[in-house]
Image (cartoon, rainbow, N blue to C red):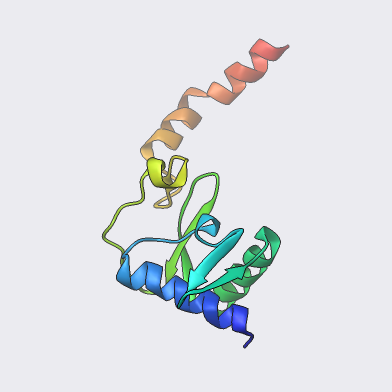
Length: 118
């Protein structure tokens, strides 16, 4: 494990366990601090490392917005993320077949939209 990997994992655990909130790329890109040392990481590198952590079962996806939010596997966060902190709105992942999506499918808004285009 490289120094960057160790620092990344340490900062992730600090955010999730001590700050009690999910993390996203905005917590790390373009740089982040651990134990007084500043580390730089590119967006693509962060995505590759989080992808590896997801595959290894170390972290789990909590919600989508323009960016994804993660927590440690089997960890609960009680502090909600707000749009103010992240600069975006959150769409929490629950059951993808929600009442709203069922309603939209039942009234056929997509078909109405296509009809209005032609």
